[in-house]
Image (tube, helix red, strand yellow):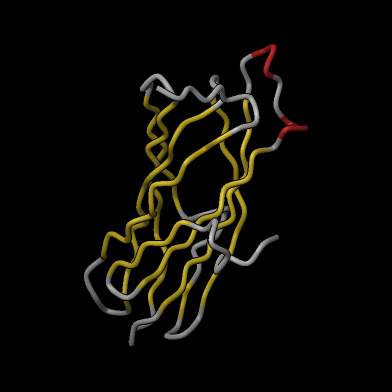
Length: 138
């Protein structure tokens, strides 16, 4: 997996928590004739703050190329509720599918500092691009 510091990574920092995302189109998993396009995305969450935080939940907004929106909410990420001490990070890989060859994802994590009020940590918007997308120059 490529380093999230790679120029292809999307990054966003909220309250000293940095979220980096790098999407990858999965050509071998996709079935264009059946309108199934699949992506994986590598996420890195870094705690650059002074407090320990725990990821509680996630919220995604997935929009396809024609504007259809799907909202996804869930407990933790990939079955975990990672605890990040100052200076620590957590990485995981997950995936998404669309009925069209492109789209965009954006979201947030609900994180709880030790003894504090939960905070909303933004996940940067990132593009889901495939080799099947027809690019038009106007």
